[in-house]
Image (spheres, rainbow, N blue to C red):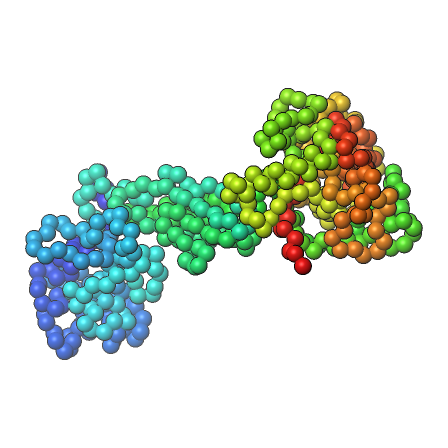
Length: 484
Ligand SMILES: [Ca+2]
Ligand SMILES: [Ca+2]
């Protein structure tokens, strides 16, 4: 191909010029007011057998073009619109950029059309991403110096996490010759506009009042008359960035009496009855990491930690009151910033939520197995045997099956519950611990605990004013409880 020549769709004027082949009658072969001869050169509603036919079987026009009338409608490059009268040179339909123009010209009629629709002058418009069994096209090879750049994406949409109830917005930036067309897809399926979803054919897609069902892989196809480009995938996650969704479900809390290195508070008071069966009725989001010193500083304006250095060290030396204050202030800040609706709030996990998220469906001593010799724990936790007597930046060890880091070790984690010296008897739903006691629960062991104190079932407690080098926390995001 010579430089500056491109294959493209014909303009509407080019299409009609080629179709007429010098004629000014209704059809390229004459007026034919009764459509008596149309079947000689066109597959249309009266002779097609209601399907498209092999190209080139009927009579061509004077310039040798087949099927200009009928068979399939043919896409043109131009947007559909009104031409001004008088003399025009190489007309190109409505100007690019008019946002309320949303269809492209199709010409020539099709196998479904009655005779009048197959005339040389008949015009129609169709949405540019339409796919129909009567729409096809032919191409032109044209001289286009400096023109004919296929659509290309210059800035793809970016992945994001948005708390449900708010709006998610994806934007793509693209370049290419003349008007660009956009079509957004979710998980490979073309998106349709709805009351919540707008901009499915624009550069900016908006999804309002987000729900978890909106989660998925989003792409956008950008097209022009010379080609199209598909963006890389942008994922939409419902929930705050850095948090993991934990679905509702049930699990056995605590440990069986047979568990190695078990402590007596890891089961019901009698120790011989049925184990504690917990139902978690509502899913929640939990922090992928312990709260870091950087996060704590940003919300609270101070950093009380004993071990300082990198900002992604876990915060410690925080009392239970300071941990709960952090949750309350984080809620206020996120709502003020428009990143959280009044339907959700941050708090500490209950002890049951913590263990449910930690176990991730497992019943072994650790979420990765029983590890009787504590030989694998070093892959998952900073604890007495490997910590060097200090905390470490969050997320450096392997996560649990749900993608949560440092559930064992690094810093122990305050829970919302008051401590009781035994777990509830039998089956319980969304347990929250005793109404009051003198100490709050903390979980998971820390950099100065031995391996047996890092087990999934291990429980510990301290007074809420206690500040220790080994105790921090992580937070959950939950719906505001409905008022009775
Ligand atoms: Ca045709
Ligand atoms: Ca921890």
